[in-house]
Structures are given as C-alpha cells and as structure tokens.
Image (tube, rainbow, N blue to C red; front, side, top):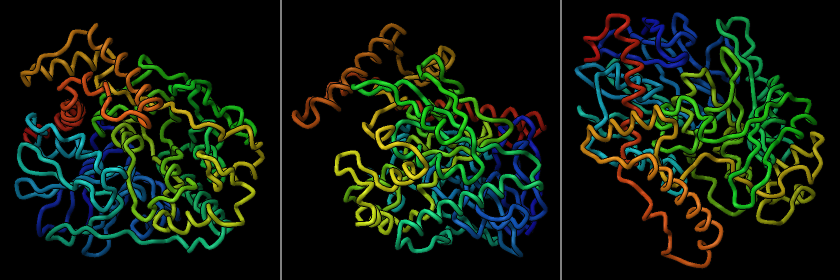
Length: 496
C-alpha cells in the first residue's frame, strides 16, 4: 500500500480525509497545509518517540491522528485520548476515513439530517455518566447512510475493508508514586524531542492552560519536561462563589510565562467550530486564546478530575469529556494538538487510584471534598506552597443552560437555518432574557436545590426546540468551508 497525498490549500491546517478504493494499492489523502507528509505515512500528531521513525501506530502516547502504511496494510491512528476521534463511512463504492466530521461530509458528498434531533445526545454518550468508551454511540445518521465514530482505537485496512483494532499499551505498572511520576516526566520529554525534531516541516510550540485548581497546574509541571514555557489562564470564575481562578502567580513561580484572559460571550471566536464538535458550548473558552503559530501542543488537565481524584469511583471504564472533545474541530483550524497527561497510562487507572489512597501519599492528602494527592504532590514538590492552589473548586466553563449561538453572525446564520427547517425563532431580546434566566436557574439548582429539593429544575421551562439543531447547523457551516476548498481545486463534481 502507498499514499497519494493531495494538498487542499484552503482547508484547515491539520484536517485530512483518506479515500479508499477496494482492491487498489493506492490511498488518496486530501489534507490541509500543515499535515506532515512522507512516502508511507502522513500525520498531524506529536507522539512519544522519534519523529523520523514514524512509529505513531505502535504507541498509545500520541496527540493527534495519522495514517501509516506497512506492507500491504494501512493503519489509521486515532489520538491516545478520548478527546479526539476518527470518522469513517462507505459511500458510492469508496470508503472514507477522516479526523473531521464536516471534512468527511464534504469529501463524501453527505449531509446531516435535518429531521434527526439526537446528534448532540449521541455525541455526549462518550462522557462517563452516559456510557464511556465501552458504550458510546458508534454511528450517526446522514442523508445517505451512517457515518461511524471511533475513539481511542485504530482502524486497520487490508485492501478489502476496515477493522477496528486496539492500541498497544506502553505503560508500566504503577506500583509506586515514583514510578508514575517518572513515567509522566519521561513521556513529556519524549514528546518534547518529537515536536522539536529538525525533520518536521512546521514548528510546534508547547503551551499549557493553568488555573488555581489541581489538574492544570500539575499538567504544567509535567509540561515543563517537554520544554513548555508558555501558559494561558482565565481569571474570572462563573461559580456562585466567584473570585479569581487565575493560575498566573503559580505559573510565575514555575518559571513560565503566563497570559491572562477574561472570558465573556463577546470574546468567543470561530464559534461554529466548537458547536460542530459536540452541539454544546462548553469548550468555547478555548476559542478566546491566542495560540502560538504556526502549530501548538496544548497541555490541559483534562481527565485529571477523574483519574487523580481521591474518591472511590470507577476508573476502569475510560470515558470522554464534552469540554475536551469540543476542541476536535477548532484545533484543526487553529493548528493545535490536544495533550492531556492524565490520559497517559489511563488503562492502569485502578493502579493510579490506589496511589491516591496509599500511605505514602498521606502528607499530600487533605481529607476533604476537593482532595487530589497526586497533583498536589507534583505541584508542591515543584515549589508551589500548599495554600496557593487547590483550595476551592471553581468553574470557568463557558457552558450555559440556554443553548444558542452568541456572536451576531452566528446567531443570524443559525436562525436562518432554523427557518429553513420550518422552526420559528425567538427575537433577540427574548434570547437574552432566556439566557439570563437559565443562568440563574442553573446556579440555584446546582448550589441550593439539588441536594434538598427534587423535581424543581426550572431550566426545563427555559429551553427552545431550536437547540436540537445546533450540531447539524454548525456542521453545515463548517462543511461549507471544506467544500469551498475542494471546489477551488476543481473537485466540485465529487462533492455535489
């Protein structure tokens, strides 16, 4: 098998779509301008191993996706987290595989169905309360058949068909904290060597998100081993008990440069790309950051709230997270590789959990409701004082209970889409009122009523049926970007 790459200059930096013809020994790969291309592989990824060896199909420590040819077989490689995914389908005698749903829709000439209202709930099924990686919805409908979703596994192609295969497990057994700590540090160092390889055509700058909590600061400590010197933080909290959630001072003590942001709806950018990932707004905060150019390895604390939390819960079942997954389309546009160290070795979650309850971790255990000994030890041993972080869990999420686009251009586009579906749209003042009322109803429910009063959630009365169409609307908007890129190459007949 060999690759036949074809650059689509007007596509997002890191997007790709592979087209497979049964029985052929050539695989056409349409790709954006910053996908790394070689004779027998292509990738938009950073992995724990030498870049020149291109063994990203032989590790689970990979941020991003790629295609690797070996002999008469091809492996389509997904991320080593459940924060990214592969999409694949059959259409007109061809098979398609992509790291982007709207790119696949454009290349295969498919559209999401306007009469199907469960897209967002289907996507949310990968989140732990709804199922996790063993039970998530593995396909969604289009106007001409289903497209399939794949997290944390690879696809093997033998010239006849696609087969789902498991990733290798490269982690050791975490019998002590020291073994786990060295594994995290060594993985970061290997990622750093990979991203700095002179063989890369495009440079990558590492950056971490930090806050006043546990997981992101621990991640920043780990990221330093990869050569990371830059951080971003969001200052203002949306919690009922407000206050700064800035990690700027802690980042300074770690010797890292930190840029602070205040998030609000007016600062969101490329909004459709967030909605297109999950049909939810929880990741809109990612859109406000100015990421290093041309490419960025972004370290986040995602999954730390599960793996590093000192609580008796099921860590044997891996799961995604809607906030993290919301970056899947935007990152291709902006040139981001999403890196979450808590995912490294996550299949050994029971061993990591046991460390949190071990006697050796007692000096870093607070025995309260917000207790994470592993990240606390990592951060304190890096020189941050105990009371400087991890005191109260705060929320800086962009999640809102009333689901509607924020910026005027996006609202206008969405409302036009709804009208084409025969749905009446509320006037702007009513949207504003519903958003405010839902915000306060949500605060009251989460902080005052949830533990004391059941069946009194006022948010159920503050919704609009149009929210069910946010996912197909956003994907139609982003699909059009990919379609225009193909048309610029004279490929409009293939996507009509």
